[in-house]
Image 1 (cartoon, rainbow, N blue to C red):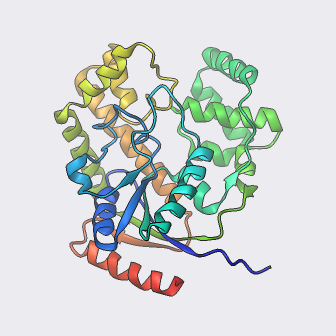
Image 2 (image 1 turned 60 degrees about the vertical axis):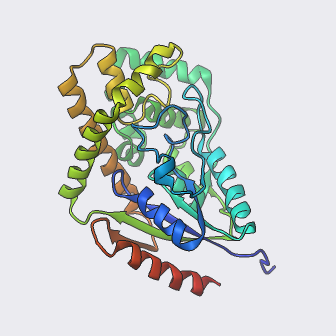
Length: 317
């Protein structure tokens, strides 16, 4: 049967943290009558603005942004929900005659939306309790080593200091007897009417990316990042097992507020964690196909991307 659904060209701007994705997306949206859909697992949370580099009203420059400030930090946001809501938004934006622009650095979301969502089993509370008890005795680094035995691919992707994802990967294996990597490979079909134009933006020089990360983290501290986390800390209902508080930078400052680290160490740990996060993002990005890469520091970046997009969209029409 011939698919008669209308084709929806979608711009997908990917890149590691601090690579300039948001600024580029806003400029393109202004130039191409677009709306932005955030692909960021931290921007969904209200009250988490500075540490997520969330664009403010002035920075948005009148451009509509979606999937920002939609949840309280006490809530969780799943990949499946992201895919459902994003597909609805893409179709709605196109109906209004505008261009959907996906922009962010949560590569798991991009992968699920553009390459298919894996059919993972639901969480099992009993197995999670078992894993937590085991981790309390052995430590999460030992649990990560356990993961490397049953699923070396996932272990290479998941950081040893990320208990939430280590737990989930081990949980999936214990429930199904198959690794979470195997489940990712057995995916649900994507929406064939959505045709992504993939763009990757990052500094050509890795040292330059590290410099941008360090400069931005210091700017966040100067803008009141610690006070922002302190307000979350003082609520009393949040903790480090929540995805929101495990976000890069927030966990390090949370430890500072608990007296585990000093100020100087906290800043350095935050910068190091952000660099490690960027490295994992780049690992994901290198697996993407049909992606055109651009240098963040290219003074002609916007013009080059704009010209290439016009050519690509003409080809899809």
